[in-house]
Length: 91
Image (cartoon, rainbow, N blue to C red; front, side):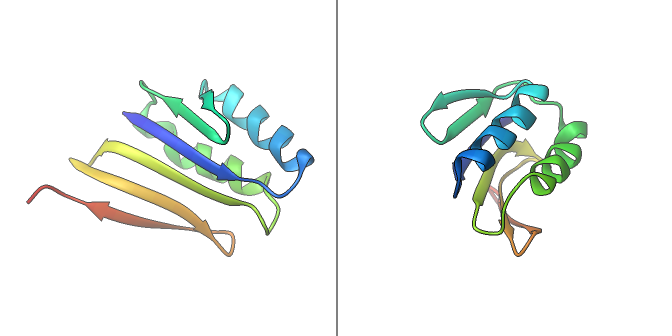
């Protein structure tokens, strides 16, 4: 599965913690505030989200773009320390 992660992080400490988590999962920085993995295992997505949540400040904003997941394009975003998800299917 492809994942792209857009990050708007409030502090240098948040950036360091966030990038450390992504490095542990093999997600690479492709541009400023943008990270990607072309072969991310679907089964590890929940763990990644939990580890990201545990290492963020309240002011940080994260979006994860996932394709394919359940044959849909999905956008997950963090709001009040809870993940929300938007699904777009081709039906």
